[in-house]
Amino acid sequence: MKILYFDCAMGAAGDMLAAALLELHPDPSAFLAKLNAALPERVRVTAEPDEKQGIRGTHFRVAVDGEEEGAEQGHAHPHTSVKEILERIEGLEIPAPVKADALAVYRRIAEAESEVHGKPVENIHLHEVGSLDALADVLAVCWLIHELQPDEISCSEIAVGSGTVKCAHGVLPVPAPATERLLRGLPIRAGEERGELCTPTGAALLGHFASAFGPLPEMRLKKTGIGTGTKDFRTANILRAFLGEGEDGAETVLELRCNLDDSTPEEIGFAMERLFEAGALDVFTAPIGMKKNRPGIMLTVLCKQERRDELLRCLFRHTGTLGVRETLCPRYTLRRSLRTVETEAGPVRVKTAEGFGVRREKPEYEDLARIAREKGISLRQAAALLEKTT
Image 1: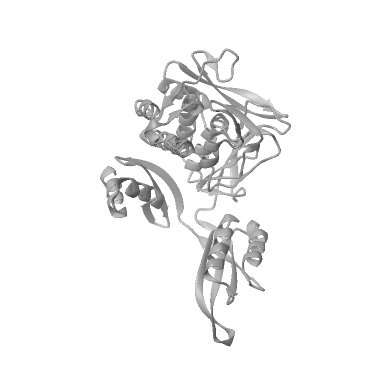
Image 2 (image 1 turned 180 degrees about the vertical axis):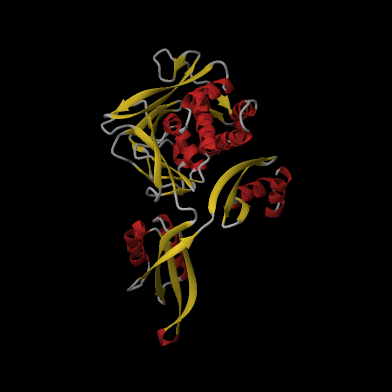
């Protein structure tokens, strides 16, 4: 099983992700030539060796009309409508899965901006993330991931920075409002540096591609890609991408179990919520009979061994248990991957699970539910739109 892991200790931006992935590609020059051929003539992408605090990596550069973003006499960011961006992507001669991923990433950004400004998505105009240089970053990341073909993509917690950032709307707190909405549900921290460490483009790309967040998973490391950022900080401004091989479907996990006879349903529900936030793989309950003929609940947590201490603290903090049992369990899982399918009602992520002689596909519930709400149809009818497409 091929595993791709992003280390975002210094945040994430589209160009840093693209550069790190480019270092993992078997033929970076050929890829850049292919990307440049697909992009509008005004846009030119290059990659150069770079160094941050003695660490060598690659800097991904995008020039529009011969000038880079941030240059003193650089080009101004136009106000680009979501419709224009999506039409521009639709018109590119790129592989269909790359196109679907790029469209899905920009829809994520548009929905975040829509929520921030209180306007319908069709009335949203994008500034920095709508520019041609940002489009090149998004396409590069989507295309590189398509060609690297990882079976699993995961990510560390994301450093977002602190202080303020100057953008098209003025000076905003970090993380900027749209970035904050794109990061909801993902583990974040401020980090040690002031300034914007995670951009909206970086947040949208990680939210779309990463299926898990946490420590570096167990793997046989094959290659590491390092993408450098534009700014200089006290800490090396880099993003690392690790590519390795994991055991195909076999791993060892912990089962942590406790019996509860004095917790309310609300307390148990809250405890389960916090356990998932602390990195549990799964949390579930079962009714049991306890001493003194009391009905009770057995709460079970599945987790990686490195998360044991944090989850034990969580169990003791949020339940009334006086003791937790631990069992080391072999676990066998199917390989999982995620792809995006474009339907007439919008993108739908489809999970694929395979191994041990079986293969299953299942659409992401949240995407079907969104379509069902928007169209005023049932969940089954939303699923039928996907079947019609595939």
